[in-house]
Image (cartoon, rainbow, N blue to C red; front, side, top):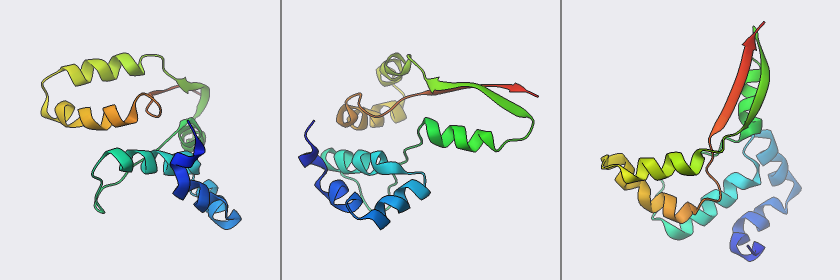
Length: 119
């Protein structure tokens, strides 16, 4: 995929202060790229939010928890199957997710597995 698709994101992160803000806010440039790409397919209004929480965000969050030690954190291989099954059901929320998942095209969403042991 060419970087020309993300003209706003590329322009925004070319400024070092903006890039540092994204890193500090644990958003990263991927969150902006997701928002920019989805906005080109979907009618996103000012009251909607796009949330991107990757492995690093979850690891940082759970690393602060007392009494546990993270044994493994990774993307799960069942994401596509889980979404396919969800979108195949008649649930009204699943039906409304279809357009979003079509726009996403398997590029961004994942399921995170975190295994921890009590210490």
